[in-house]
Length: 477
View 1: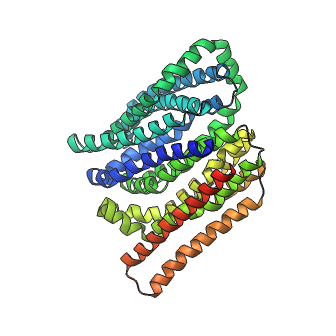
View 2: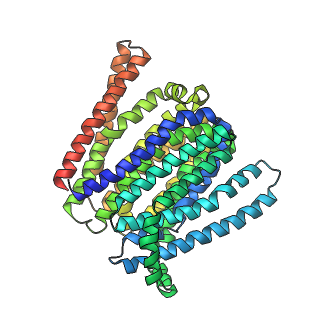
View 3: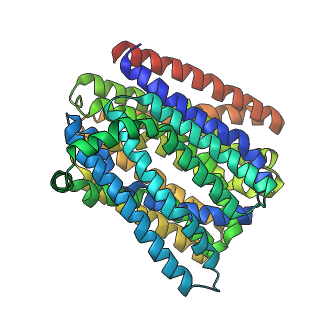
């Protein structure tokens, strides 16, 4: 096997394990916590999620770029200093805010943010530094272990705190913080043995200041881009909480968690491997070959599962998570198309970093973030229909990722046919899945039989697609 395939397989193993643990625990968590508690936790998590990518002002991405470790060390030191400053500044800000909104409906949210955000941002900063340094030295095993351990400890602590203490949003936050701390502990050997000694030896203040100036494009362009990217996803939940209440926000949060988080995590692993490989080999024909393969086969590997969610979301959620979460299933079916578009194309974001076109990525991200959230808010305010608002948001998201893919491939520059091949592949997958569903419907097969038939098709297509994809990548890259 090629080194790239081994690295990708290792990262994917960690990220798949990180999704298996929450997936197995989700039916238990939804029976311990109610939508209202989950909604309050989701609002706090959304606020943290918007800030998390800028915990180091995106300087962490630059750690991978220098040829020598002594050149990367000042960047790592800068990142750690920024994360500490963020934690202190946000603690002071939230303490002041909590004082002024005491007694209002937002007081509990302020307390949740105070409990979660500052500590999580500091831990996130340490984790980002260790992960990107691991990418430098191709230590993918540490990243995979940290990802899996974080997910496992988080769900275990949330279950233990909710079951044996009291089910509340604070219990969910406490479990999340312990999980974040676990990831940093797993990565501590990287920090203690490599990163911190390198910072101590090669990072006087002058060199840190020089690194901050040299890579200024990351906080000025990539940072706002990451902020808008998270705002596009997390802002939808905040709008729902404002317009429809915490209980609906909790339903939406579970739907978002099931449809967005697993595939985004896998896409993040793909992005890391792609970045570490393509950062210095972008112009090689093999890189274009890999992009064409992943975009062409991806819809067949992931798409049928999303189609299954669109068609059977409500009964699936009611059965797995409990009857009180049936509304989440309906919302998950609406979000499935947006999640498919995101999972298949979001890993191309590193092309903008490699080609120094972050300003273009920022402009596209900002425009669609505003348009998507505005569409959702306007539809919600005018119709008071949650499904209609979520549908408007999902349509805007699908349009965004199609435009995003076309622009990324153009600046690479790769063949424009790749975009067309992706769209044709996706449409063919939809025709095949809906064709089987319509056939089973005409044959008057009961719902359970239709679900079983589509589930079998999903497994077959995913296995065939994976085998074909791995064969092409291991043979040609």
